[in-house]
Amino acid sequence: MHVEHAQENTRDNSSLETVAKLSEMLSSKTETAINEIDHINGETQVLAINALIEASRAGEAGKAFSVVAEEMSRLSRKIVDTTDKLRKESRGTISELKNLIKMQATNIRGVRLSDLALTNIDLIDRNLYERSCDVRWWAKDASMVAALSEKTQEGRDMASTRLGVILDAYTVYFDLVLCDIDGNVIANGRPQQFRSQGTNQRNAAWFESAMSTASNDQFGFQAVHRSPLVNDQMAVIFSCCVRENCQSNGKVLGVLGTVFNWEALAQEIVNKTPLSREEKANSRVCIVDGKGTVLADTDGKVLEDSIHFAGDAEVYGTSKGFVMKKYNDNDSCIAYAASTGYETYSSGWHSIVIQKLNSR
Image 1 (cartoon, rainbow, N blue to C red):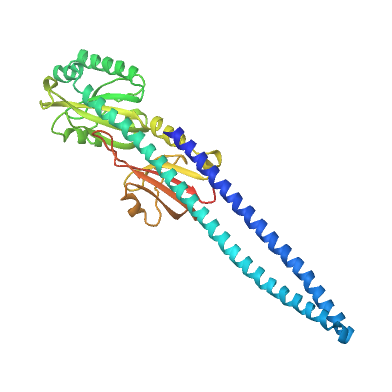
Image 2: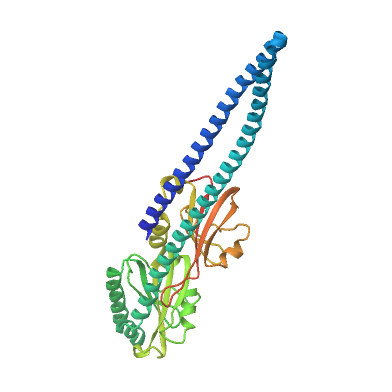
């Protein structure tokens, strides 16, 4: 999709640039032609005046020539009126054409950027949908149930080994952690790298939200944050209860948390948004939550900045589009798209592309 948008962008820009150049050429040639007519008419006026002077000197013999000279002068004045009218009309028409081209360029820019924004948030949702499936699947793994049911060191070690095997296949995760019902981490897939075992997570959002679910058809979640489980790296955590006998509605034994490498996904998406080199220098591409907090950002201000502008509440309440607004004192095109969701998952976030209007 990104490649298609880039190709469309090239075609649209090429067409508009061609029309704009033709407009400028027409304006220049029209002005040159009118100026040439004025120049010739000026010389005609001089000749008419000189003819009148000579006719006057010739007296009676110059009367016929005087009539011709006066007619030349009258025609010259008519030409002046005509060229003035032509200049005003051509300038007005060409100005309208330029405004039309500018408006069309603005619309094409806005639609294209909002399409790119939609592609970005769709890629996020599709990927996170898979993560929500992963945790619900792995929470039913027999080794997770055994570790929490048997409560032996052997069981906990087996669970850590099993989680490590999963991580070897699913490299999008920093780590997988298993907690007992009180929130104590009893196993994790990367124990040599992340020493989370023995810590308590009962107050973590991902643990609390999992514990509030009614069955394993549901999952818990903690949005973008610096997770202490993985040395404060930027993460998103999905979670699901581990239940007795691997039953979806069985007794809760504990919680499995999957610590997803957020930057590897989100930064890759925003950084590779298909914009020209010049556009990238004048654009900012972000993923933001419902409050405008930056979750991914080509400016590198994740969780350090919020995107706000006049009328932003209205913008965040719509599904897709663009507005022309002041942003950081620059006239900008702000294109946006809200999460439309994928299958059973929706992040509820927004994708934003902010581009200065002086960029092509």
